[in-house]
Length: 319
Image (cartoon, rainbow, N blue to C red; front, side, top):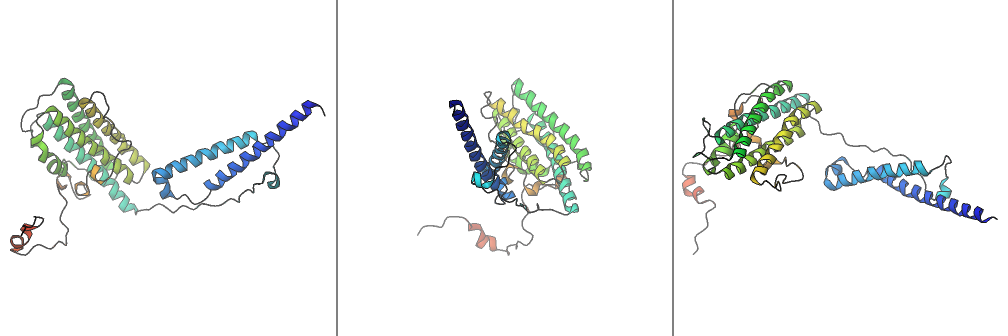
């Protein structure tokens, strides 16, 4: 046999062996991907998302390699040593649903709350800039040119957002609201005004408020019932998230603290709490500064506070 023929046979044998190995590995990956072991709840977790994306990408690569390397002949399992798995059906549990009425009420609540939040932010920035009204700083604060311009810009942005949300409330099927969120004003802003005496304390406070606003928009988008409403809300929420970054750059021009977390925090402490949300029969002035006491909470009997309640939490006397 000619040496060239021998080399050709060796090359063909290597190619067949490589192809068989790829088939075996790709089949294992595809079999794992079609397995129902990955639940929707698993995909929501960070590790689950990484596994889901890794398996998806590996499957695509494996399929592409098989398509590129395979010829038209089907290699029997006896030659590859791999038995093709039979297709299996993966059944995902249906997502939790609410009634149409409940969904519409929630949609309206999100947009109504957002508008009262924006109206409150306008009042807050007016106060920070020395404007009149019920809110006022304890003394005038001197700002540099960049800080004053930024505070004015953010006030105007919140005013624009409040106007836009008026139409979005109607689109979501809700009744309009016209009052600033009392929960923010009385529960968050008013108690801290006396400490806002320098440019830095004002900027830090404004950044904290903007972070809460951004978290509230992120939370709201996760509860809305349609993609169109989520788009409308986050068209405003995305800009609100940038407000905090702008204030952070004023505080530190290097920008090292402008993005403090890899994802937007929409948990309870990072957004408006439930007692500051504005339901269908309320306006912003009805939002509570503190949670309401439980309806079934028993009132203490007369004299009980003096005899026992006044010492609650106090350290006991030694000896």
